[in-house]
Amino acid sequence: MPELRQDPAGVAGGLMAVRRAQPAAGGAGGPSGRWWRGVASSHLGFLLLLAVLAGSLAGATILSYRTAVETADQLLWGQAMDVALAAEGAARRSGGDRQALQAVLDERRGGGVAYAAVAASDGTILAHTNARLVGGRLQDTRLAAAVAADQAQRARVELQTGEEVFEATIPIHGTAAGGAPRFLRVAVHAAVAERGVRTAEAQGAAVAALLALLAVLSVRQVRAARRALALERLAALGGMAAVLAHEIRNPLGAIKGLAQVLDERAQAGAPDRELTGTIVRETVRLERLVADLLAYARPHPPDRRPVDVAGAARRAAALLENEAAAAGAGIAVVAPSHPVVAWADPGQLTQLFTNLLLNAIQAMPGGGTVRVQVGPAGDAVHAIVEDDGPGIRPEDAAQLFEPFYTTKSKGTGLGLAICRRIAEAHGGRIALEPAAGPGARLRVELPAPPAPAARQSAADPFQLARGGRPAPRGAGLGNGALP
Image (cartoon, rainbow, N blue to C red):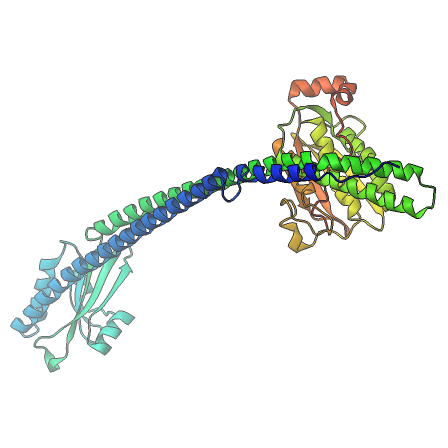
């Protein structure tokens, strides 16, 4: 029986290598850590400055608009009061003579006045810029309010011509029968006085457009900063993963090899054989964890070629034959008789399906069937993976493809994150869809190959198989976020 020895120097050397790699990989004290903290603080300061400037600009624009509105109202009210003072002076001088009032209104006709009228408290029109309306009646709530309060009333009203005017109803006091007050109704054209308001509105629209542009640029700036931080952290994770993989894989391989030797030597049914089997299974799981970490931390650009999607799914199913049998699960790939070709990396596509199928198998501890349906989808190719498991809880759906998020006790949370990264690297997407039954339903969309490649692939289907390179067993397999 081989002798198992500890190697203190080797272990210590591995730990020192990891510790030496940590600052360079973006630790708190390393230059990379200081770099991304500086980026974050600079972007935060820029956004705060931008927010202050935008707030100041918006406040100044609002103040300018309010000032323009108030100025226009004052100008219009001044024109109305000018007519009222002239009418009241004529009433006092003539003892309330209607002809004197009519003369005053005739003098004010035009010059910004749309119309003017003098009415008694009961609404009878005593004088009007339109002489044909003299003797008629004014009956509206604005006159009634002026009579009741003996105070001026002002409002914006629309004429029958569609023009909006500034209208004022003002009590005038002069010598009249019984000493009853009379009321001047005057409407003033608002267009001239409100030119400043229109200018302020145009300035407000321009400022709003500018603020919207600044908001879009700010969002892009924030996203760029986040991408920069994510890339820096990913680089740090890649450095750590390389060191850890080097330090962990060698002893793992030795442990698994020795456990397999012991398993072969042990007799069937012996207690030692169960223990060695457990060692082998757990080392395989650790190998998968390291492979997942490397696959996520160090993605490779896809080497694209025409690939039969159904063939990649079947290769993944063959890799997981033992896992499916142990769980009592079956895998069914449904596809058209002709190749459904995607423009993808064969190895990465097999890895994607391996992760999806493994997640589906692990979601069905009581057995069931994993169904993979492949078919064309316009200018793309789709593959739908369904299982008979309990499905995805709504609270888990939003984080389903986030790295390191898992609901499993032994999961890494990288399986589906790797799937999303592979799909997006190919210009495709992966999404959770509502399932017809209780299980989960994931849809993968990948681009179809360019036309010449598609024609060549259809003419020589065997080229698809020759171009593929199945992922090695255990490489890139993950315990993803499926519950």
